[in-house]
Figure 1 (tube, rainbow, N blue to C red):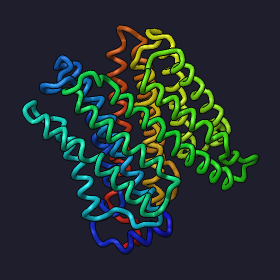
Figure 2: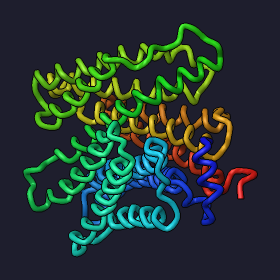
Figure 3: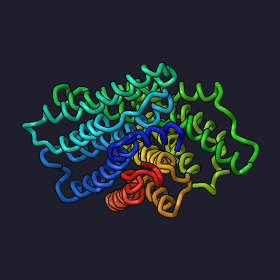
Length: 397
């Protein structure tokens, strides 16, 4: 736990759950993710794919990209931004209000057709308010280096609004889904590009290993530029030779970037190698999307999409959630057996979900098994880490 984190917690007198953003948002996002994915599989299997009066697939996509993902983003950014800016964290009643707004959006996803408009407004409100909070904190702290993070949060809010506008303008199509995935991919490349080499370097120094991974340099900026350009091209024109070539180039550059971080030397510490694994899923997603863009029909659409969602988002979120929860609650950053099991489960869930579209008659079975593994991973996080998220560190008052 950082000195500023410990000092803030000592000064805070309310419930520990609302002392820092990571506590409620990591816990509730994990619980929602553990419930929403198997619910979609049940709906798909026993209710003709419909959830009430709406398409169950659309509900599933929305709740993963605009429900679960923003919840984890909020937990991470509301904790990280104070460290970046030196400002006090959003806590207490303000944090509880943000959590309530996020929760209301999840409940709104079950609204009947005659409440579609107010439900859409309620669901959209959280990301708009959250983006505004991030902008306020970053600009208030004059932390211009992290303006790109503000832009990404705003982009996700706009994609969610566009999602709800499809009923009025159906020509929007699946652009909001691609927009959310593009935001997630760039955010993982941006934040992952900071924390993966940093935490790897710290661990290797503690273990007295050499040579150490290189520091960030112009190459990292070039990879980020390629990544953002590839995502923008895919958003605008998801099929085409130019888009495919750009995605594959960005994936190859990302692979070189990942290799420079020397993750293979960290196999003794799960809290470190899981970060490399999450970034590797991002690279696989880019490469598969590139092939699919250049040769439509060669790769089922669901495979690269789930390499990004179940793989990159699922693995990286659990990697960050476990590490941040341990560190910010004053515990040693060491992975126990439960944490290792969580990592294995989420990777297995992603692998099965990416494989499922290729196996014909076994697709449904693999999707079901993947959903159960996913539920076990995020439910396991809630069970293992929930007690530390709702309680104060030992010795604090």
